[in-house]
Length: 186
Image (tube, rainbow, N blue to C red):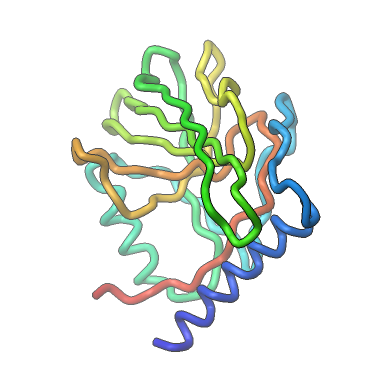
């Protein structure tokens, strides 16, 4: 058990180092991500990357738990799907909040929306970035967008699974996907 927590702590410290080193010790806000980039897929930090197709919404959390328990190796794990049709995207919200951190009170932007896949059900997709942002680049239009997602292992109040956006086609990638060891089911 101690080994597992040490790996999580190491992954968190690596993530914190990447963020801190890319922004220095001043204002931790990030500029808006560049749009229209062709290299939108982030790399995996601390292990290989495995990408799987997104399961139906009523099975995604169980599939995630099985994926992590069947392979205990250290790797980045993400689901991939294609989002299409602006009418499939609803409840688009942008929330900017200040949070207390050891480095001050930076602003954070949180974007969330519901996405209704015509065959796989409804998902709530979440996105976060340091600083004040509009999130407009996450709105769907006529052109389909490929996304990489990672469940946060929760559902919202309506029982819809919540997934973090790790990469969004055309958007500058973040610092990377942190590899984590799988874990046995409890």
